[in-house]
Image 1 (spheres, rainbow over the protein chains, first blue to last red):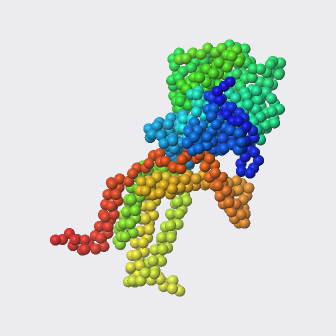
Image 2: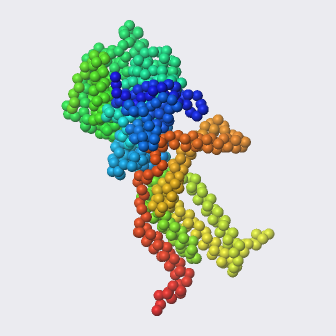
Image 3: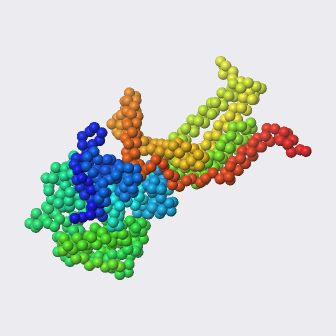
Length: 370
Length: 265
């Protein structure tokens, strides 16, 4: 039995005199995991999220944090909101201040922290979201993507244990989505529980450890992504579609008369399942410049925001500036050598992926830390 | 597009004390208003222009430039009216067949003085507006014990006015794409709908913002993270020195005998 950090039991909620927005929702969110909530528009995902940090109070049932039922007095709510931070779907809804740094400092200042700690948290949150250079910029002069990052930085400055993000990738370009998902990997690697809602089934399928599916205010599924997408009827019933990788695997395996299982979640896992050649070597380094032991022909990729600036200025020559882990694993599965330039906090995520390739697909990759 | 807000944020004088700049602006304004010599408004105009030029490199939003031209036109017309209606020593007359317009010497002098006072006043206020972001000024007002409710409301109104403008602009484009501004009747109908929609959307926005405030641990007070530079004694001395210098110059020009007499034994 996994340790749950947040849970609900028989949760019901309705707005004023309207119909129930949530009906009898019972679920558990495991500590330190990546959780995705899926469901059509109006399913109740955002309403449920607002229960997680006590913004909304259930009409029936209860919400538990760390095993204890939520208390709704001001002191308890302040403590809860420090631990469970929410990033709303529209960043404009949660940016109040006139400059970036002032908005990121909003939460820590409300906690009455000493000045030095506020400064430290603001600098850390801005660095994590890649907004350090724009810290004095007026918020109304930022692009939508930058405002989204400010909203996330504002939540991270609270140093929460659970980060809840309502559709964090909606309206963002591919690179920005990649950056945000890398950030969630990094935070998760530090032990933070990440909860997101999304309509992007491809992302949820490859990213989440487990999914919860809501439809018309009811929880219709809780379990692994494969478990949910294995039931096409349920997927159709909640107006979702199968992830592309899931469909490609199903159709290719059917055409080759091979079993669907195991289900690859990414293109590198599909290659691991199908490729006959022996894998190449994966060189991993944490410093910015290309190490001497790495062969020149090795394809390079970046995983994490730390070295991206160096890649953007041309100091570091890389083929995969975004989603470098996936790019490098793909190359390795094709039998080529690859170099992964890694942020220190992401080592755990790499090991997790390598472990899955070994255990689920029987592919051992030679990893050389340089 | 350079908005006044962007210009203020990129001004080299941004980090000067907002209250200091306000004190200097007020001292220049008052000096110009109480002066009876045209020289003082001219000096104030030149100081204001130099500061404004250095602050903005004359990058002005089109709407502000247009407003300034309008204001200039109003000043010219007002000065002409003053020159016409002020009685005094006849200077010259313009015969328009039906009527003859007489300009008096006193009228022309007063009109010129009023015109330059107005232009100088606008210039120093422009310098202030183009070098001081509004949130900085609002937060600076906390230092002189302006009630925090007023300060916080000012900052929030400032922040949300940009969001509402953005919404309005999106709705305007959407309406325009569907020919909402075709013909006068349509134009008025669409404009009224936009106004109603902006109002309802502002209510929605307020509701969502309350949720966000609660989620971010708001406890009824907006703390100021980086307070603007305080009003120092230097600024007060500078403002007072500017005021008294301009006053002395004015007196010297208008009544040189009286001022020189003060220094005689």
